[in-house]
Image 1 (cartoon, one colour):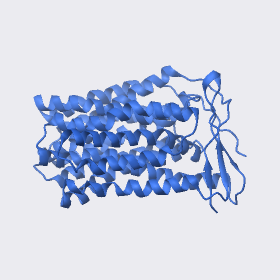
Image 2: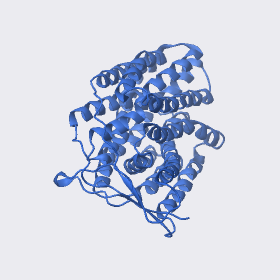
Image 3: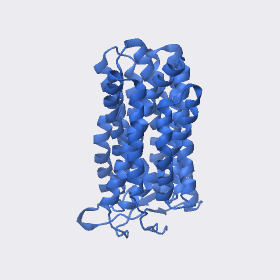
Length: 419
């Protein structure tokens, strides 16, 4: 039976109104509300993976741009800046817009734009044209995240495991990016980038159709004013500071890890891509572990343990010789990614009346800001060594650990009843 999703009724937080967790009202259905929600979540998980595939593709394409154009570390890190600069500025704006009214069309539109930007990036030899193509992809990512994160919270009924599945979808996209780039760009060169856009275009069409349905039934998603709890901007600020520090580490590793491992092991592009795959695959495992740990202990405690473990692990990534670096990459990734999905739900609980804004900041702005540090790290690597530049990242991991240590667990707010 076809289902039309009417994502309406998100009432404005202006004039003191609150947005409570969403209830799902059905007018005609043969399944339970829980079944419908679980059925919607896989599409969001898949879409998140496809969308973040294009964030990961930027880092995976870096060695190919260096080989073809002989750019400096600072120049290639500028591509990471392109992918994140507009995204950083736009995601809170998209989040605030979805707080005022639902905009589900942003999900397929953002996904499609993310893919098209990467798809045309290899078709020009101009650095400026490539920069703008990657920037357009970043804008698509910005449009996608806030609304999709809100819908994932709805579909998972507030479950930490459900949100970790949504988050791990993005991690898997990052992890698959180096493999997809190696398979497509390895034999075809940069002129093969249009093929990279195909997953986004296909998934965007499926998502758009699923959101529209065929009109024979309805599932209306509504948000009602009156959710309990108050916005805690101080705790949200500490959380954001930690996410920014974590983002500096993960984005910089994504930009320079392949080059570092290739130089250290005197190895090919394939080994560099394997290092990136290890980073993102272990990160996906860490994200799922975070969701599981949140059922055994408070989220903040799980985040503290993981953040503390990441500090020596990141330092080991910079200095461990030989193939042992792959073990350090895996440990560092798990420590950095355990807090990932937990930060999203924690941010939403710190700002219960501004779920879109919270999602835009925790899943968007604060994470994207890490990409702004990559060019500075590239300049440092050009003036010293890449090893020294990577060692600096341990300091940002320490900032994450400190910020996490200052967080407190918010009081749980019950989900609204469904009817």
